[in-house]
Image 1: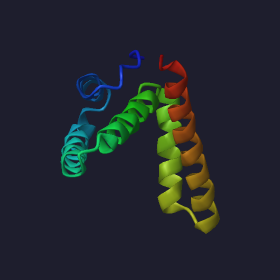
Image 2 (image 1 turned 90 degrees about the vertical axis):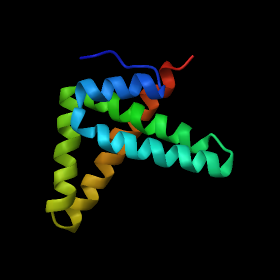
Image 3 (image 1 turned 120 degrees about the vertical axis):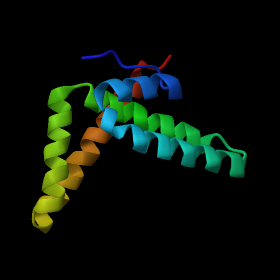
Image 4 (image 1 turned 90 degrees about the horizontal axis):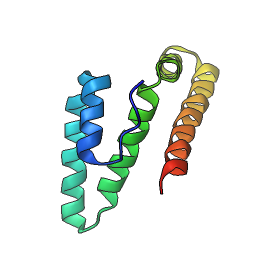
Length: 108
């Protein structure tokens, strides 16, 4: 397991390249979109949301067990009935909430 990188664009890009290279095009698209939104609104909020989202992505993907659990719930959300999809959405939300909480607790 690689260490959790700082929530900077450069560090997150390097981590994504290492643990999920197939996600790099999405990373770049979302970064471009966040940068455009930040420029248009003269607000750093879109870039902060981008780094928070991708820091959580890296947090989850760098832990094989947790990444596998998320993939199973994502599959259940699309292949199950309504009750299974609702449960899957709840579990996906829990995993994401826990990732964001873990990252918030390690910030200085």
